[in-house]
Image (cartoon, rainbow, N blue to C red; front, side, top):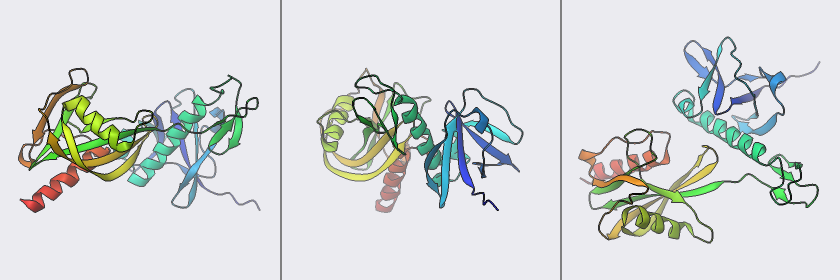
Length: 261
């Protein structure tokens, strides 16, 4: 008798994830075999969730199936347990890497699988691993107020924290100071690590820091920032989604302020 082992199936069409809907609740399909596998060019292993293997693949067209819905990955945060959402994000990042690493960036030859998370060029032997774009996020506090910005690329009217990508040859600390200066014309001090978060849109890592205002006159960079201002707990603007590291950092700051005052 052949034992059939269940797996979590993260099936994507572009940035939409296929979820099972039952009784008004959503879940990632858990079964020995997934729907739509006949439409998968290749199936990948993408880690484990709750001691169960995860598998992922993408389809070229959206196929509607009774009892299932296609949901945008960002929206899935509100529908799935947080641990499951981040497993979905990891699968999406993996598929992005698999799609972008089919050919060697050095010589253009088609790559071959080298390990579960690496491809290798059969000609020049270059190994290609997932490319993770690292970015810092900085919370700047000044007395009982917090610096928040509304970026020109923000969707909606919420505010967030200063953030930016790490440049070549730059430390995280240098990146944090540079981004705050570039976006707001302010100097910072007492930089302290808060937390990090994978950001699967499409493949990043956010690294959060708390800091203190050290000087300068607030002036928003007109090329990137629509508005920048300091806010107290009682005057907070619309905050970013709870999915984001910016929201976790802001909530932590608000909680600490309420303890102090």
